[in-house]
Length: 251
Ligand code: G
Ligand code: G
Ligand code: MN
Ligand code: NA
Image (cartoon, rainbow, N blue to C red):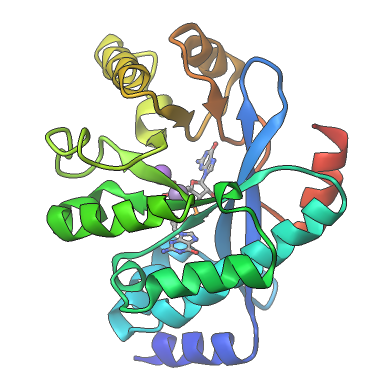
């Protein structure tokens, strides 16, 4: 496949970039954290991670790419820390990367190399990863938690239901998928969001609502008790050089 060869080239020629999207405290407007999101620059445009992540998984390159993303994110975070900017960074982890034998060593090694406090790193695992093999994933997440690293469940509510596992999962954060936020005007969708926020409260978890695009969505989420949000209303994903400017202005 031509695009896989192209991706391999992009990895060796360092055409991949880690961009960041702020996660905002809905009450104060302060930035609580950032999500690291891969970008592949192809000339003047970008190839979407929705396209190339599946290819990276299919070809096995995702382990190498994922390791690099975590290193880059921790290196950028340590630069922020040196400038006295305290935020948490969330990194998306795919199943293959997560299940590597040396995954935990990768995490501890990267934290040590960049002198990052474990609680400033959050790993985002999608609901579908959890459901692929709940027993194995729960075991791995327990080990992640003993390191002090945080865990978020991503795209919550979109996959096969993990509701029966949610209590057993060592989580810090539930991310409400953009598809729900988009339709918050529909009463049945609003009641699902409300239920997820209630569930998170009972389990003592943070909720991050994704894909907030309008002040009305922000208000509704805040009224329901959601504390943190991410979306174009606040900021689109941006390169690290822009993030430092953003954080200097909004913290
Ligand atoms: O940024 P954007 O909305 O285009 O991302 C599309 C998808 O790619 C999202 O589902 C996101 O989770 C995924 N993605 C982005 N960066 C990474 C990454 O570094 N690792 C993995 N596994 N997925 C990522
Ligand atoms: O699947 P995951 O949640 O990891 O990916 C988040 C994706 O959602 C990123 O690719 C990011 O670019 C995208 N995104 C973030 N905020 C918004 C938003 O407000 N609107 C839309 N349409 N996409 C968003
Ligand atoms: Mn994510
Ligand atoms: Na998501």
